[in-house]
Amino acid sequence: MSSTYLVALGSNRRHHRYGGPRAILHAAMEELAALGTVTQRSPIFATAPMGAAQRRFANAAALVETELDPQALLAALQRMEREFGRRRWRRWGDRVLDLDIVLWSEGTFVAPGLAVPHPEFRKRAFVLAPASAIAADWRDSETGFSLRQLKARLTRPYPLP
Image (tube, helix red, strand yellow):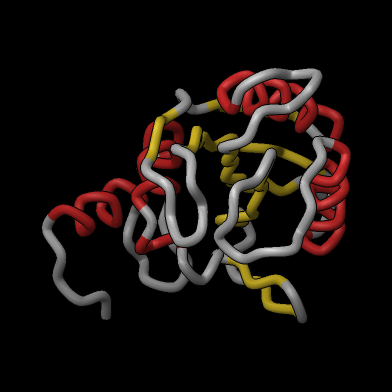
């Protein structure tokens, strides 16, 4: 059975082969096709660094239809990050490529090391801006709000239920 995933992409470091962060995201979106069918790709957004990161980020989102279950997709995304040169050593640091499962068409999934919906995505404009550009009406299985509504709440904040 095929499922659809919303995958967030981010980069703020150069890659020796692909170049700058925008080029890395274009290459990564092409590589996602090896995991299934990429049905939508967002524009790439420039965003401010967070935490220990020093450089601005390029962020995007893609809808991927695949036969993979959430854990298998996570493993494939982490393998792709490593192939692009990602080294996991500092939270919030600069990175060549960051890939996160944000939403899943089947709803909620929780296992060690993976929670879908992504637990922090509702607070992150760098995820919601590209995500709402391609799937504005997709509803968060936990809050019932659409991505469009969640994005609007970042600029007009009031508590989530």
